[in-house]
Amino acid sequence: MEIRKTLPEELAELEALYASARAFMARSGNPTQWGRTEPPTATLKEDIAKGQSYVCVEGGEIVGTFCFFVGEEPTYLHPIAGAWLNDAPYGVIHRVASAGTVKGVTAACVDWCWRQWPNLRIDTHDDNAPMQRAILRCGFTEVGRIRVADGSERRAYHKVER
Image 1 (cartoon, rainbow, N blue to C red):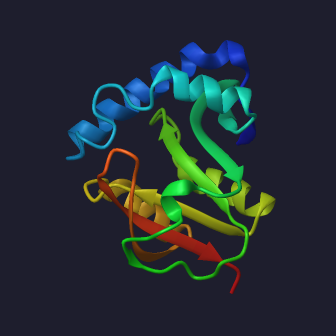
Image 2 (cartoon, rainbow, N blue to C red):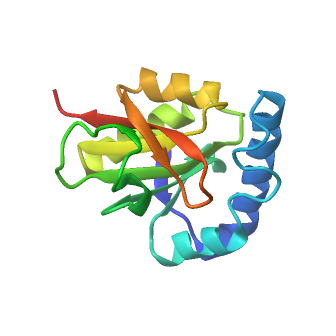
């Protein structure tokens, strides 16, 4: 699977992919994490403009997407329960979505991010059981809880070199 930066002209494909992911989440018992509008188009445009939006390509088709950056994530500064495994600079993975046509998109995203920066943080909603399982399979440790911008809580995970 090829992973590369998202091109601005691929925005419509990303929006369609996220719509499909939201429908899957709702069918899987997680209708509220992204609701009907998350992530908003403005956020996707900003991710692309900042060079932190990536696509997973298989057979010439976009089969997944995610946001990745190295730097401070404001919602990770003060966990409301638990603690991060270290205070070293970290990479952040957000907005992972799969078209559902290829297995292993999350693992490919995490492996790619790990090669860029081997100290990673990620979070997900309590109702997102498929993502929780994928995160743990990828070697993350659940370390506590954070509060996101809308005030809701998320499970926090950290992956460090052992």
